[in-house]
Length: 259
Image (cartoon, rainbow, N blue to C red):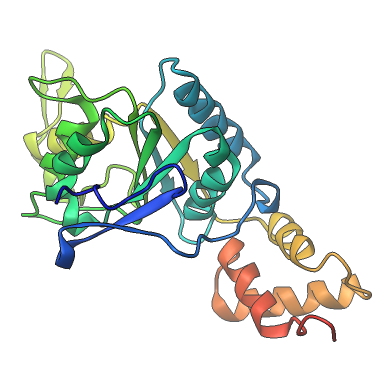
């Protein structure tokens, strides 16, 4: 049985690769996050939405890397993207970093299907000695065979270059005839990220943006000033302001439906 043989893509918007079965499993319960639910990342939404619409229409489009501070909406943006565009033929396959060695096989199975696929790699980064990024490189830009036109890779990461960066690598760089020549280790770090034509940065929320996220979760709050004081106190205790913190605050204090 092939990697995707058991998937009915007409009715299945997303699947995840499971290594123990060497195949794809349909995702039964999609995260319901909607495009309009996201706050504080308007610039990133517009850029990723525009790139995805070009991809769906058959126009030139890029692989995308969403990098930056944790909890700022990178993964939620991609999930909302699927909910927004699945009726237009967008399909998504989630592949864990440790399973990237199977990526060429997955792509081979979907390259001739009449859908547009985004390979979703969440929280992607590589440590010294790992080799999984080599399979990713071949899918991003191809080798002897060009990558298929109906597949793009969207990845999220806390690291801008996906690879670890060490001070010692910078010390090995050289100046030649007035030009800086980066060390081989730096070239290797940058070369993978460079294959993502669209790179979107995410930063920790300001207090105003954080409170906007809280307000979106509590549209019917009677005492908004009191809500803000509690939300700020919650974020201060955690030591970070972001969309994830707003969600966690909501889960802690929101009442049950109907109460």
